Amino acid sequence: MGVMAPRAGVTEGVLRRGDAAKGFSEDRPPLGIRSAPRLGMILKGYPRISESFISQEIALLESLGLSIEIYSLRRPRESFTHGSVRRIRAPVTYLPEYVLPHLFTVLEPNLRLWGRLRTRYVRCLREALERAVDRRTTATLRHFLQGGYLAWHCLMGRPVRHLHAHFCHTPTSVAFFASQLTKLPFSFTAHAKDIYTSDPDQLRRKMHHARFVVTCTGYNARYLSSILDSDSAGSDGQRHRPSVPIHTIYHGIDVAFFNYAPDPPPAPPFRVLSVGRIVPKKGYDDVLQALKKLAEWGVPFHFDHIGSGEDKETIHALTRRLGLWDRTTFHGTLPHERVLDFYRRSHVFVLGCKTAPNGDRDGIPNVLMEAMAVGLPVVSTRHSAIPELVEDGVTGTLVPPGSPEALAGALKKVLEAGPSIEAQRRAARKRVEADFDSRRWIRKLFELLRDAVGAP
Image (cartoon, rainbow, N blue to C red; front, top):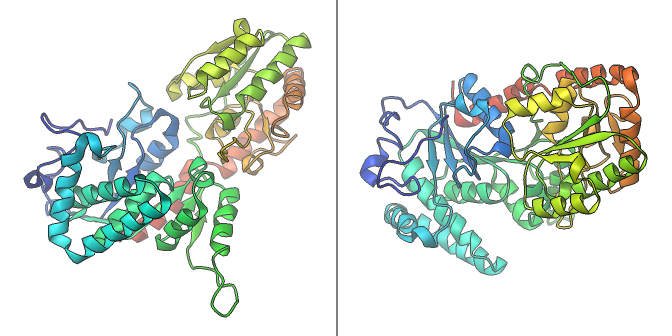
């Protein structure tokens, strides 16, 4: 699976310094036997069932010849994973997620690093402490100590030549501090929640220090550029755009795995499907209100939901309150192989994306691409970057966010369309094949990272 358990007696992936040259596991050869330049990838958690796009990305980067080491800030929370994880060869190091439960584990390598780096370490620590006081948060100091742990155990004397973090909050903070300590360059991929719930000043600072920034939608790229633009006035009063490259690289999907093969039951009750985390930005309260309308209009249906999240109990209670419990099945989190069967057996896919109260929002949910690739008609909202994928009336149906009645009307129209929806199914598949094939986009990312690492 690419996930390596710690040795007996080793907590949170910690190594004795004498073991560090041998690597995290016995199958990692000593430095010098295989010292090709490598990429260090910093993740919030690995593997995560809700982040299959990351494991797919790593597997494809390896297939193109990039050597990778994975550094995860959190251990897996599910007992199963997607098939793409089993193809990954990269060794995994788990950093301590918190400081206080593992105080010696975190402080010991930082003290050693202080002894090695002296002035540089003190300067970086002082800056981290100043930012922690300014922001009134201890998280900054935790990220610094994690960066020190990473630098001592995984980067000093190792062939890692560049760091890349997924998500611009915690993982990029750790990458930033590790970069400051080791002078290794870093870059990061910004996604959705991490962008719109981050303090713009902190995000701008990270972008200024990064070699480049990657994001997964044009909508995100425009927002990130606007943050840089807001701080680009020079002393002469003229605006000077900072030279921080921002690359739009869509996640895409494996179009071969999600092959076109719709096979819904020929007669009602219609199968309505949604796949996604149960969090405010997914708009499941609006979806349920829309389904209530369908029931009032006499449309026979059953609703299947796949996924979980912190709002699960609230959404379950709303389902009961609306009288939809007997028409609904919450399946929890499932691997791709099982989700694929639901895509093929359903009549319509629905997602009610909107901006959450804390500013969180989606980019382009991969589940929309997956449904479209299989041939399942999609109904969603004209929100964030979704129109970059779904063209209303051509490859799917879009309604305003936060409008359950419009969502219900769109679902009813699709369910009653019959064979006339076939042209839209095929247009959706062609759209995904042409513009959202992960193999196409991963090559662009590979070229960026290969040049950063200095690999041949």
